[in-house]
Length: 207
Image (tube, rainbow, N blue to C red; front, side, top):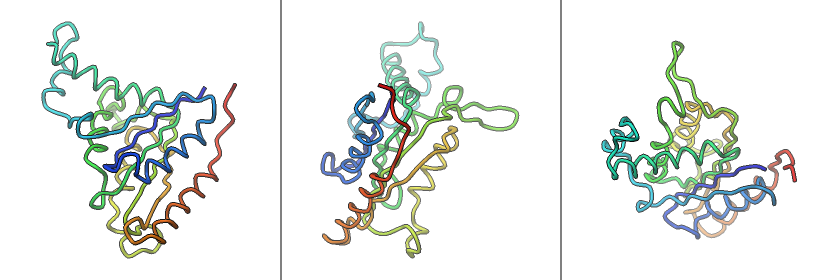
């Protein structure tokens, strides 16, 4: 059975193209026998990492206060979902040339020294090797190809760099561009993304 983690982060919720195209991709890569875990990131359910949470992670389990225990349990759950996943699908809209702060907060919980990466004599080594990631990157304009705005894309390089640091090198992007240009441009952007989703092939799942 394939384990799929579907993470979305748009303020538009169900109406977000990154979520809609992402759901189609999840259905394709997951098939009928996958275990799918969904996590929709909002300011209410993914608080930014705090000094208190970092401190709690360094306290022995039997010495933590109830508040510290709850914080560690939440932080551990975020990582456990990632560790259990074979495929991770991330809906990532571009906000001000980068990613939503909720998605950044999720990343901050995932990157934990001694768990998802470790320091060695040869430098940091990621511990999440072997996973496959798809990012549905929605943008209001155009940032791929020969676009003059390409240099303003801090979304894709950051996401690739983050997961590469954790040992994940199989990171694939499907862009949904032109969403703020107008009706026809937006529709073409969605259609192009859906065509890309249809071309994705994964090994068959065991029944």
